Image (cartoon, rainbow, N blue to C red; front, side, top):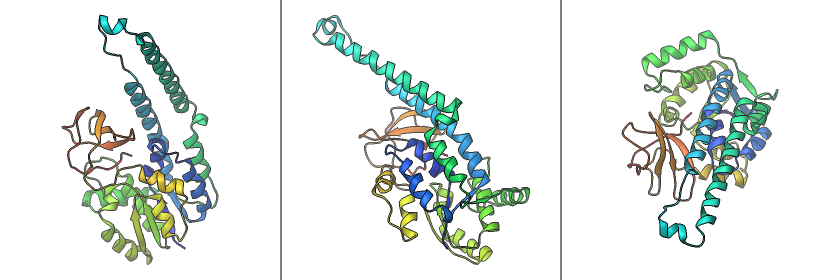
Amino acid sequence: MIRVFIDTNILLGFYQAAADRLVVFKTLGELRSRIVFTTQTRMEFERNRVVILRRIAKLLTETTKWSPYTTSIIRALPGFDDLTRVRDETQRIAKSMCEALQRAIEEPEHDLVLAEFEKLYGDSTVTKVTITQDLIGRAQTRKLLGNPPTSPDKLTAGDEVAWEALLANLHDDLIVVSQDNTFLDNQRLLAAEYEERTGAKLVAVTPRVSEAIKLLGETPPKEIIAADETLPPLNTPLGPGWKVVAATAYKGVIQRDDGLMTIIDLPTDVSPGSLLPPSTFRTVT
């Protein structure tokens, strides 16, 4: 049997994608006997979902905060009062939506994505690997040595712990679904280590849920294919039409011409309003 490990950044992507990705959970539920999570996955999801929801609320507020250009002539034109009413109504609705997002943070039962994740994670047929102190020690050694999957710019060792957990507990062929470059860029090294440690094969590392489903010999629903295609390709230069709409230290939100937005890692010299240079990026976990 081929197992599928789904990284936390994929699960968090369900909050950020323009397409409705709750349908993905239904499909994953049908494949639940093949799915592998670590207990760290749940902790990372719980911790980062709050960060994502707050970023979404902030972005919604910033992108609906506008005022029309005004002069005495413009104010005298027919339609100006209607324009200001549209502005006020837009901001009122946005405020209500932000309050709903805040309610989802404070009262998790209102978080639909969390509810679907908990349902999948809690299924008895889903394999869950417990993170132990021994695995944490192995992960710290891996990070110190710089062996993949590791990210030298991160102080945490989540990827390292997850990989050590998979090596220690699995003996089946494996597909890793992740948007982390540390997995995507080191498939050959990871495949060799996985085969040496487990006797099985690392079939693929892919950032697309639909690709993993195809590798299992199943046909992914069209909604999942469409959802995967809403994000720009990873590890390739960003094409025209993307610009930064919000940025903090190392993190930012980019928007495409058609309105799609996603959260990414940013160079330190990028500010809101900038057109992104031809550089690679990965989605934020």
